[in-house]
Length: 250
Image 1 (spheres, rainbow, N blue to C red):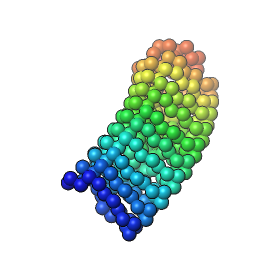
Image 2 (cartoon, helix red, strand yellow):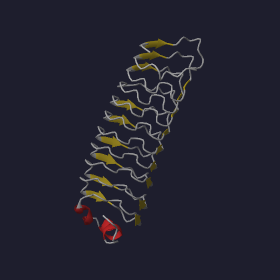
Image 3 (cartoon, rainbow, N blue to C red):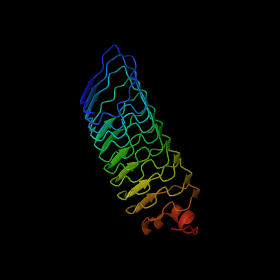
C-alpha cells in the first residue's frame, strides 16, 4: 500500500491494527489517548523516518519497530517504563538513542543489528543488559556502563566490530557467554573483582585485545574463552595460570 502518513485521533484508546503492510509509511502521529504500543505494530515499515510518541505511552511492545530500516532517530519520554524484546532490532539507520531513567532493564535483542548506532546513553536505573542486546551494532565505538548494572547477558556486544573501549564497573558480577565475541577493535579491558568466572567464548576472536586485567577473584575460565586472541594476553598471570597453562584449546 502507498499510504505515507497516519494521524490517529484522540478517540482511539487502543491501536488494534498492525501497520506492517504499509511499506511506504513515512510518519505516524500517536495521540495522548494511547498508553501502549503493542507487539510488532510497526515491524517492517521500511520507509518510516519519524514517529511522535506522546508522554502517555509507557510500554513499547516486542519488536514494535523491528526492521524499520529508515528510522534514524526516536525520542523516548520519561513516561516509558519498558522496552520489550527486539524492540528496535534491525533499525539499520538508527544512529543514537537516549534511554529514559524510568527503564530498569534493556531486554533481549532490543538494539540487535542496529548497524548505524554510534552512541547510546545507558541511565543509572538499568540493572541488567539483556541477551544479544547490542549484537552486530558494528558502528558502536564506546559505551559506558553505569554502576547499577550487575549482569551482561550472553552475546550482549557480540560482533560490535568498532567497539574500542568499554568500562566495566565494580558492580558487574556476571559476563555472559559470547558477550564480546568478535569485537575485533577492542584493545583492552579490565575485569572487575566481583567477577569469579569467565565463561565460554566470552572474548573469542577479539583479535586486537592485547591487554586485559584479570583479577585473582577469577577462579575459572571456560574453554575457548580467548580463542583467536593475541599471544600478548599470556602476560596476565591469572590468565596464564587458569587458561593457557591449563592446556585449554586456544
